[in-house]
Length: 85
Image 1 (cartoon, rainbow, N blue to C red):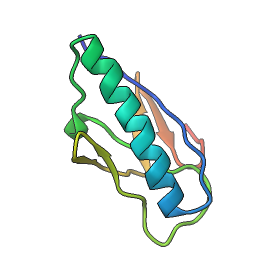
Image 2: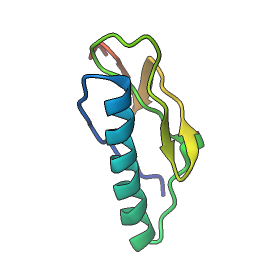
Image 3: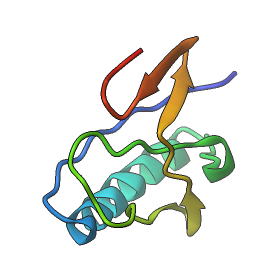
Image 4: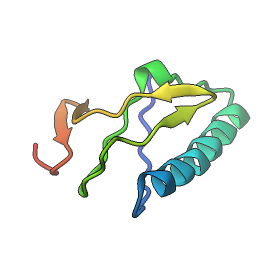
């Protein structure tokens, strides 16, 4: 069974997004461990909506980097960073 999880964080800087992303990833990891599920960073993706950053934040799940992408397909719908689909 494949599970999709979505989490949203707001921040004014890359550093703030990374800190909030780490908090969300840790909470997700704890929740998954309690239900005996594993999160795969290789099958995960992050999208930075709005704003302009010189370089994307580095997001990690269990120490593994999650790629930041411009668009991602969820349940057959392609989402992009401008909320277009």
